[in-house]
Length: 147
Image (cartoon, rainbow, N blue to C red; front, top):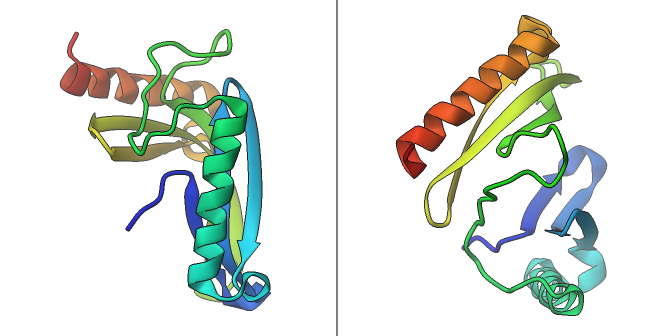
């Protein structure tokens, strides 16, 4: 079962196992990690994470819903809704971790479903990657949200 704003993190090489809560509302973000071992096991840590999320949302005034909400307008001038620049991490066969910048494009074809793709800045350059990402987002908007 998925829990909105709660993600599972299992990194054996770093001995990190637990639940990560990240709540965003009105341009601010609050996050906290709930370690399995320190919280009495995997299930108890999940319960603590969900309780924290619910109390935090209530405290900051964020409406409690398990639906993914798609904004109609960006909160920052110049930004495009559904397009953001992020750093992606990939692992090689040798166990190395590599990072590269991409523009991530997200959209919601139906309630509780989020799909995403990315456009490489290294491959296309910053300007062309952004142009491609915006074009993908506009195509998805027409397809799923209408003209």
